[in-house]
Image 1 (cartoon, rainbow, N blue to C red):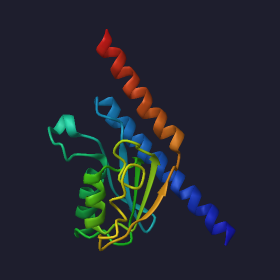
Image 2 (cartoon, rainbow, N blue to C red):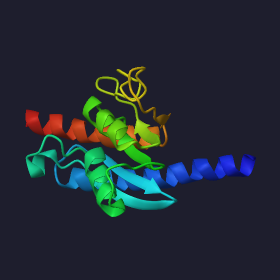
Image 3 (cartoon, rainbow, N blue to C red):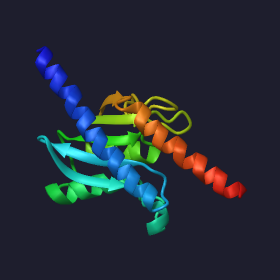
Length: 162
């Protein structure tokens, strides 16, 4: 049993590292560095990163991009028995999307004290009125995810003052 628990933690970290790589791609494009991927049966079936500025689309969050790709890969809008990995705790919009897609588990890196909808600011995912409940695992590679975001916003503020 302990071996399976260790493997699970290792898998979460491995997939979160990929989410962080995707977040770095967003940063290179001038987007807020958030990356996400959907996993089914130990296979990545969808990936995405923030593209709201580049696409002029306020819904093009990392989670939405990864979920759209996964839906296409599966040929289904229901992503039952999948896990979503995201470098930052999802907002309310993305939490609603996660619920409607019927994603089984959410694994996120950094908590978002202002808009986190997986329990930090509000809990949309497991609200009593929802007909689907999501398993939530937070804080996986939290420091790396948080540092990426903090550095991005620090640079942005510095550039605005110059």
